[in-house]
Image (tube, rainbow, N blue to C red; front, side, top):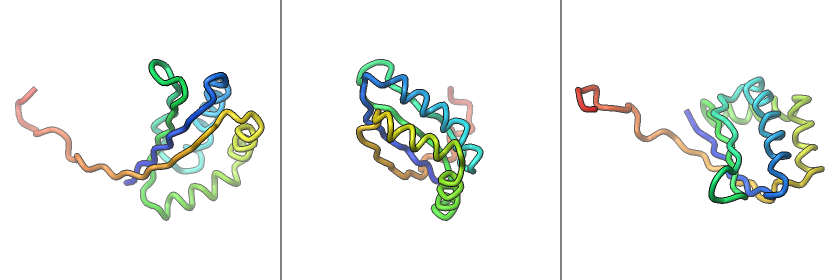
Length: 110
C-alpha cells in the first residue's frame, strides 16, 4: 500500500474555494478507486498550507486511478474550477509507504 500526501499552498483569501474543491474530491476520488483519507484546510498556524491524503495499492493502481479521475465528469469539473479560481498556488506530491506496521506490542503496556 502506498500513501500519497499532496501538500498545497493556497491563497488564504480563497480558503472557501479550496474547501469546495476538497468536497468535490471527496466524492470523485473514492468513486475512481483510491482510498481517500481526507482533505485538510488551514485552521490554526499557517493560513496557506493544506493537504490531501489518499492510499493506493501500488503505482500501477495509481495510474489506472488517475485515468479514471481524468475521465470522471466531476474530476474534470474540479480541475477546471481550480484553474478558473486560481486558489492553488503550489501543489507537491509525496509518496510514502507505512514503515511502522504492525502497530503496538500486543502486550499489556498502556
